[in-house]
Image (tube, rainbow, N blue to C red; front, side, top):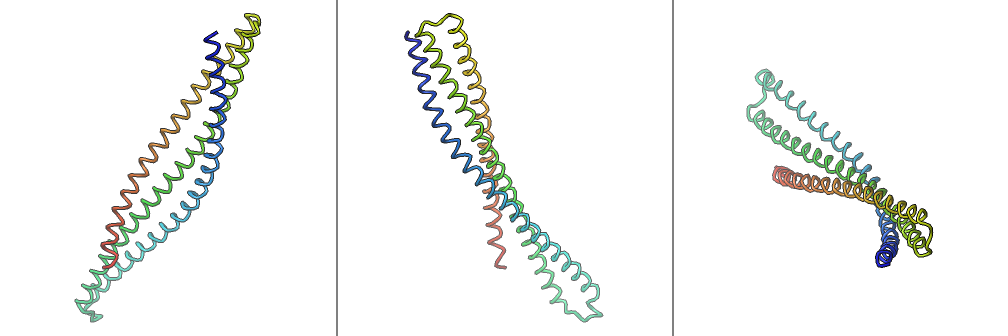
Length: 214
């Protein structure tokens, strides 16, 4: 009877845990959807920013080509050497600025893409957590049915059937929990990647602060 009491207590615990897991999964799903929408919007904006940065690079390249032509015609156009040197220095600075701006925007894009992936995985995690909760709830019911069958001295066949049903659900629960753990590990790796990207962004922003006022 001691073993039976353990199964009965476990059934009650599973029922309570399933209830908590469902609440967590519902909230996680709500937050996950919201994060996914924000990430989509940010990804759209960052793509537009990248287009602007690439346009700036094109302008710098055109100015460089124009300066080369001016140098070729400096005598006929009577262009002072000092002016050409100043323009050359300015273009070099603008090139460096454009390069850093592009690096910053590309890192920002990687950050947003990673945040989007995290949001997707969190949404997936909420679905898998809900699945765990549903299996656990079923398991709780089957465990209580088994206890009831034993207590009521049902036939061996009915007891064995009830036992088989809850042991199968126990295996199903283990598999479902493993899937939750795998998804949680994916999220951890993506968060580590996100942290590294933010460090890279911070370094590039420091470079930008040094050159922006020149």
